Length: 355
Image (cartoon, rainbow, N blue to C red; front, top):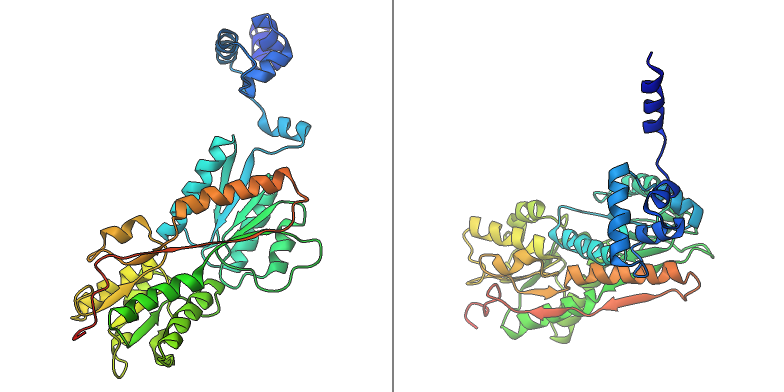
């Protein structure tokens, strides 16, 4: 074997170091390190020269090793309960936007509404030692399970749904949610103003905290109008377009069928509107429908959907900012932030027939 070839192969296999780059550029190792951290302290010409030398030598930055040395992480774990819902896709996009401006990378996982899958995903992501975790919990997520999966040291922000159970002393996390009760109350009140008296609450699972709060808002508005709550008008479905569409027959089969529905979320509302059309009703003409979330598709529905605007992308950015604040100051008092929602009225909510 040619000894020169062997020496060359060994040389190529040796990892290029910061010292190699610094020596080739005639600068200090600290300057090369500042270039990697995109520090404004490095002159633009020096930065270009160092970056060109890195490219020439094939330098690969070992970020994991650097994080271990500095005891910091540049990743944040984001676990979503249902990525098929456009609300959570928008939320995730907002999280990633905000983290990107701070130099963080998002590690994304999905539980698909399964607490067991959620434990598995959290356990896997925590092995990457993220700077923190943003969790939109699967239905019926228990706080003890979450603590078991991630431990007590990773900063945690819970979004949208509350965890069940009571946390052990020492397990602290922040919460960011929507004003579900006030939003559903506003939607129901508007339908009452439009003359509707038989109003259903459609979709969602009653044991989910967000659904429970929205149902309470619906009941508040009916109570204020002196209308008793009819349990037959509160119909549960999975919070998806497909099941909302499939269960619409049950809604119209009720004696003295409703003329309006306050839906758990926008995808439920859009699924219901498609089903109403299939069943010979005309949403926006002889049946009123409201949603919750104001996903981009809501304004494009046929008819355009009246809904509660939660601005999911902005909520994602807010969640990321809150988590990074917690990561920078672990001793902050626990925060629970409830964001108001705004009723956005469109053409899916006509007056009641005969009103």
